[in-house]
Length: 435
Image 1 (cartoon, rainbow, N blue to C red):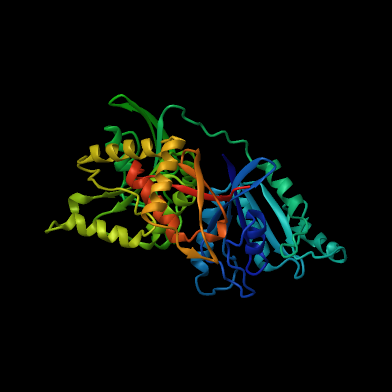
Image 2: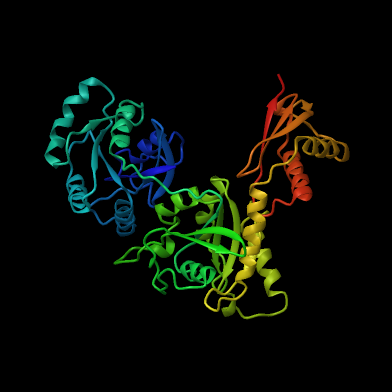
């Protein structure tokens, strides 16, 4: 479970993205010697000493009026507001700059724990250069080298020591689903319609919901928990209309959910941001249902619904297993179709297939469609076993994992779906060589 969130901020070209990649252990963020490569907030998850936390990379903040600087500064302010801890990165080779002082003033106002990190300290001879950063008034500077990985462990020790001990509530025996989507698609209205009451604030102002709200309820003999995820507040010149990411709090909501409802605006159609929003749920291997809201506002013609579904399939090519339902949260119509999809998706998400049945399916699949020649040989599946649920995960014991072509693995996944349904839920197939 996520313990909290960390925002990495600083002026341009001090090595924030390099440090971000070191912390999360992957090359998520673009690294370039050109200042200003990172413009939007970038989120990822990291872990250290049994604690998991979210990390936010931000664009460089500077005084100069360069292109996109107003948007970059606004995005950084959002990240600072969302985070539990701020990692303020400065350049140890350059020393304290006017931009550093400006960022420091922003952080004074935030009243959040700040770790001052002096980057580019590649060897001991440069250690003395960190002393001038005491003048920023943000505590003891922490020397690191993002490029070489020096001091990263010490920094992570300090991060997990300061992280709040957040205990997220888990719901045993209840179907937990979150409602996600870009601002102003009607998430809170949908939650109210699902609960059949005005449980959460509804407004046409983007970002009315500031925190994730969990509500338990019972419907037709089944227990549910709905999480209404936070939107982003639009104030001043914060360009949320083009923001690629939902609030960091939505990540913890997704993490706690079994099922994610991606809400689209049926009247406005599909936007690029919708793909970014649902990307977190796909990476977390959650069951997904696509809910097209505001269907009452759509002008109906022949095949309007089927045409919209085709657009969804074209835009979300890796979500062909996700059902698409159409509702009007405002009029509280067709809400029953949402629950029908939730129940089906949850049952598939928790389904465990008997080993004997699973192996019969794998044998029949190889007879109907023999394995292709790939990478110098043909894959042979000796036997299969389901090792977990949420999502259903299957291990195939084979002769050589390099012989498995992705198209044949997709074929096997389709056979499992044809046999058991698995509507709304992802399937994980892992190949292992038999010893």
